[in-house]
Image (cartoon, rainbow, N blue to C red; front, side, top):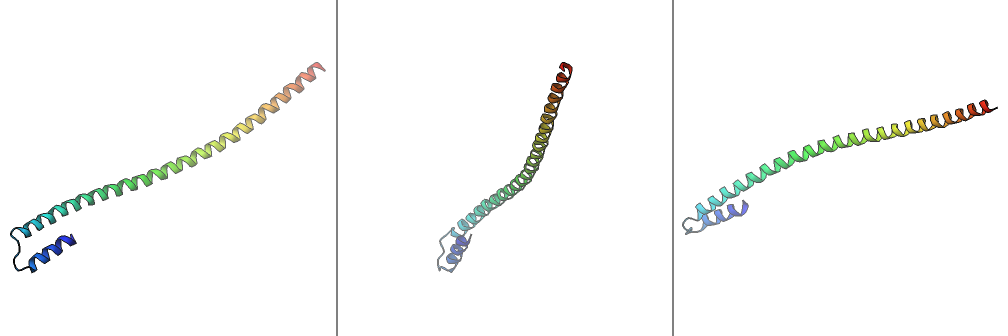
Length: 101
């Protein structure tokens, strides 16, 4: 935009502006403005997508924490069950000894 405005200012300062030059510059300005507007729309869309990604990352982080908690609880339950099975086997052995004795 700055370059186009400088060209426009220079052309106005010239004694003999070339015919149609100002209209060409104006058309370029309009074209550049359209391109700029499209880029702004794209930037807004990307901002929305970035925000959604941040929200999803927070959800994923929470789910990961939930999974880690469940894994911890499962390990504790596994340990408790393993202990209970061991104790049950020991009781069965002592019952069998008592019957044989």
